[in-house]
Length: 327
Length: 227
Image (cartoon, rainbow over all chains, first blue to last red; front, side, top):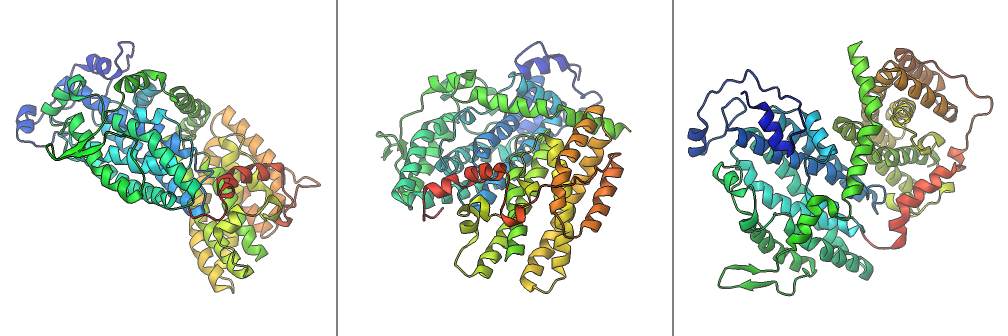
């Protein structure tokens, strides 16, 4: 494993980073191609192409960062949750997200990169997190819609990852998907209560669906033809379905759920196609997605400032813990 | 009921302050730990508020008591309502509060009121963990770097006067806290001549009004609905 620098270059998208990975001494035991061909799991000690390793580190780290940044939009409502039961549910959910971040950083560490290094890449903006978290949570109904649509889209994206070719990631995803599914049901139940509540609550629920629908559709990434990492990722068994397939699956899943809620999905062209056996729908604005990815979303600066402040304000605590441990 | 409300409000206001740290702690493990402690406090507060409402017999449930009382109706000690200046304040407050809660819940778990005993029996186990967590961090920060020591010293000095309001079990409380401070190479401050009190009688600092205004805003904006 002499390929440390190219790996870091690949995951960071920058040649400036110069830390090393602790991957020396790993002995290759099984043939990568044979394992992939047999649809078996690759484990940390198996040989793997640099690009496979780098791609996984990038994907897992981005997923971990998304969990951590994702604590903020929902966390903003913990203090104002309108009942003590809802406060407990929301606090437990945000706590779960921190836990997901931890499992995922641990899965990434099996590939020879440290959590500190990955956090550094997030804080310096060299790695991304899911763009959905750059939208604001304006009302309490947003908490329900995030559970229903955002966690719902995450589940559609993530369930296939439970079978992905890299063992530690697949196993982390099994646990995460179980918890996400619980969160989704809680969000849906919250929204159902609002949608069947007072006129003001109902209006709040519809407004939140209107604002989050297209950003949720954009969570599946660019259309298949424009997706940069997809083809190789499919070949290596990391990704199992294309962006557009998953987006379609999500839309088909949401339509009957919206009917039960009695809320309208904000797409006048949304209708069942007998011919395709799927719903036709208006795709999200991918130019907007790219703008938000590049940093120009409503909350990018705020999210990063919050994360950096927590990191900077905590530096004296981390230093004290290290100094005490050394005594 | 007053006694139950005092315990309930301590736990509720502490939960509100602790939950603020979720996404703001120095690492993920501490985000999770403080959220866990906040959830325990919130859980105890809900059971105690429900019981207080039943004792009152006026049909108020946990949410009516949490969201529809003004600051002068809250019976929490002043210690829990003060804002955290930094993590040292959060830990010092947790040390002082959890030592108090552990002693109180321990007594009530063996007390004559079976309902309160049941709630306290569960809460005392949680308090033991909160106290452990606070003691460990008090030690790390007190005996860490010069900066962490300076911050802990400031937090202990800043919060100490407010502990004089925790009058039950003062001697046993001092024994626990003295041990934790000594372990952290920190000194116990002198008791002020005229310590701030009044929380148990509903006389609070302006910090409680600000905390409640935020906590209650959404609930109060939509009277009578279901959430």
